[in-house]
Image (cartoon, rainbow, N blue to C red; front, side):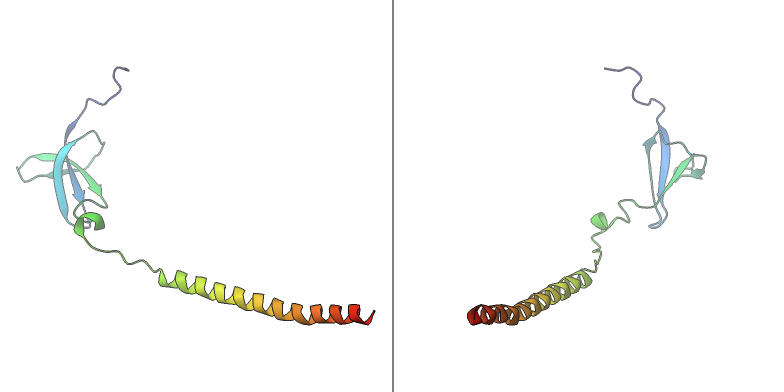
Length: 107
């Protein structure tokens, strides 16, 4: 196993979810230049995150609505157009087939 593979400079860091106004203190090696005063009165490095367990839909139970109706409607329209095109080709093929049979019958 390689030596010195894992970082050893762990320190206490505050992670702040700006969208949910939620912060937690944990150990990390992430580099940062910002600091914040924590609840215990000490100052710790600050890392701002966009999403955390306080704002993620999986943890909050909020359902994200996805517009699938438009996809289904477009598929149904394409299917209907394909069936109409197929029917038009079949209708067009019938007179051509009848005409060729009539020509063969005359011979």
